[in-house]
Structure formats: C-alpha cells, structure tokens
Amino acid sequence: MASTNKCEYCGSTLTSEQASCPNCGAANPNFVADTPRTVFFPKTIEELKEYCAERGMPLLRMRFFIGEDYRQPKAFGIYQDGNDFVVYKNKADGSRAVRYRGPDEAHAVDEIFTKLLAECHSRGIYPDGKPTNDPSRAAKQRWRHVLLIVLIVVYLGSMFGSLIIPRIIHRNDGYYQFDTGTVYYRYGSDWYYTYDDNTAGYWYETDSAPVSDYGDYYLGGDFQSDWGVSDFKASSTWSAIQADHSSGSSDYDSWDSGDTDWDSDW
Image (cartoon, rainbow, N blue to C red; front, side, top):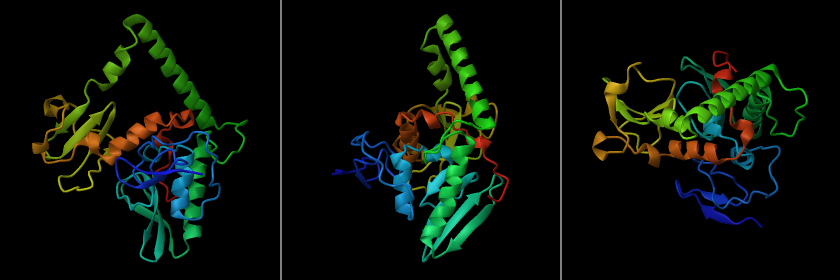
C-alpha cells in the first residue's frame, strides 16, 4: 500500500507512487521507484497530474501547466474556472488560443493529454508505451546534437579537467537588475524574472536578458531581502528545475521547447 507524506516545499499531499509533487514539481524523497504505474488513461486534472508524476515528466521544461492558468507565452495548460474546464495554448506572441471551454472535465483532459502525447511522440518519447522502432526525424537530429555535445565535453574535459565545463556554464549565475527595475536570475543559459508583489514566489522563464551586455547589472549570487523580490532558490520554479535534473528520466533530458510550433493555434 502506498504511503503518504507532505511536500517539503509547498505542503501538498504526496504518495510514494508519485516521483514528484504534482503541484510544484519538487522531487518526492519518499518515491518508491518500482511502484507500478496506476494511471494510464487520465480523466481528471488530478489523474493527469499523477500520470505525469509517475513517468517523471519535467512539466516546467515541457511547458505544460496542469491545473494552472499560466499567462506567459509558450505554454499549454488546463485549469478549472468555476464550472468550466479550460484548455489553452499561449502562443509565442503571448496571445491565447482556447482549445476547449466547458463543463466536461474528461473531454478537456483528453484534449490536453492528446497534445502532451503528440509533443512527446514528435521527440521520439513514448510515455504511453508505443514502440520507438521508427523515431522521427526530429528525434534523430536531437540525438546527433546530443552526441556532438558529448564529444565536445569529453574533448575539453581531457584538455582542461572535468570540472571546467560546469564552472563555465554556471559562473555567471546570480541576480541581475536592469534599467526597467525588474530583477532577473540567470541559471546557466536560462533567465527567470519575478515581481515584487508575487507572493507565491514564482519565477517566470524568459528567452533572454533585456540587454546583451548584462555584466554591469549583476547584483550578486547570494539572495538579499532588500532587493524586494523572493529568493529564487526557495521558489517553486527552482524546485521544479531540481526535480527535472534529478528525475533520472533520460528520455526528457534533451527536451527543447523550441521544437514546438508556438505560432499555430494548437
């Protein structure tokens, strides 16, 4: 029988069958790796969350927001609004295309679930158990890119030592404040920003910094409360990033949301 515990980041109830928190995405330290999967055809939002957690899907990286009315560009999502269930896609320009709005939760979940599987299949990933004997062209290209990166890392590591690569990637991590007043956090090659009135402490991912020469805007690597924002490393966004890294699901390691057609309605 599955045991239950509380998520140490957001307090949601978890079971040992869930690899990560369906609410904030944090890794579940009590997850039992060999627990049989229990959800195969989700019909509710909660079942869809469980389906994704059981398979270790890094939803933040995949840009799927289950149970959330997420308002930033480049996102798929589903949430409940009163008696209605809303399935949406936020396109690259920030406009929203509503795929379904209505009282039928099972239909709404099927719409977003079908899209989720389609995005996985286009990358050669089959969480629904379909064979991968004929990977897509995109998946083949991705594996070539991964192989090239591995070869570069091995080559540089042999010349300069194995620790140089992570040092280069993360040496500019930290907080930045630009002329707009907005505080950003740089993690590797990714940028995140938040608002001083964001009580939930969520940090939104963005494509790049507002300026190319960002070095002069560096605040520091350690959080200071007088900056007027929440601590990035105490946020649900940071928890989700760490869950992505520790999920152990190599199928999703090379997921690039840039491969999605964000300009279409669905």
